[in-house]
Length: 278
Image (tube, rainbow, N blue to C red; front, side, top):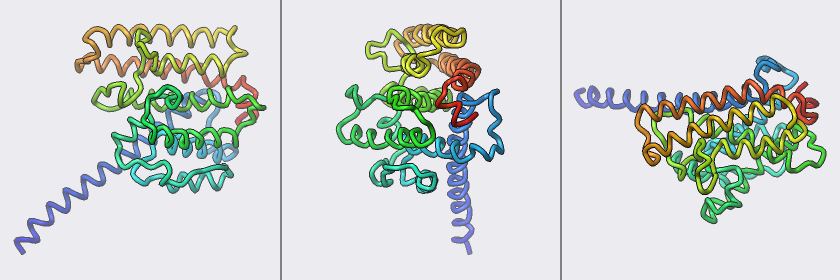
């Protein structure tokens, strides 16, 4: 009886830890999906209970998860979703799986074009190329890019960097660039940061809108916050105090606001996106 009394609290503790961990992972996935949909649609399309595009949105969410955040054997339902939607060239989970949350970030969260910049070792490089194709092939299934491979690639990159931006805004710890791509800081020698990459892919994705107020406003705001982040990181040689880290995350939130208040209208004016969702 005494042993039972000792075991019960232990079992309850383990159960509570499991529940808390599960809910944390679910919350992170939900938040990533919300941020992505806000940047793609906010104020220009009500996607809640939208049966016309429900399958497309679920496919994009599943593809983004498998490409960027899958690890530890998860993702069966997402693969099933994409297979049901008709996405071709999907890998098996064993071809993309990582057994550690921390390690999967080091091998997936350091740039959409990381495989061409010598960021990963050969094994992670090969796996990242496979993972990228999930999002690319899904986007190709949903949209007609009319043979424009660069636009297709930059749309996928936009979704990727929205996710990395979300990771930079969350959590209670600053991760170095060797774990998650830096938020900004154009003074970086490698120029591998979210703001710089967003500007690069926005230029490609919205090539025909460079003359518009929306486009110029987005680039101007990204430049502004990039300079703020750069100054913050240089202040203490990249060692952020608690107050600095709070400010750092606030800059990420401001960048998200710039995107979600402008990108949906810009996407609506792009033929490939308008035909699929409007």
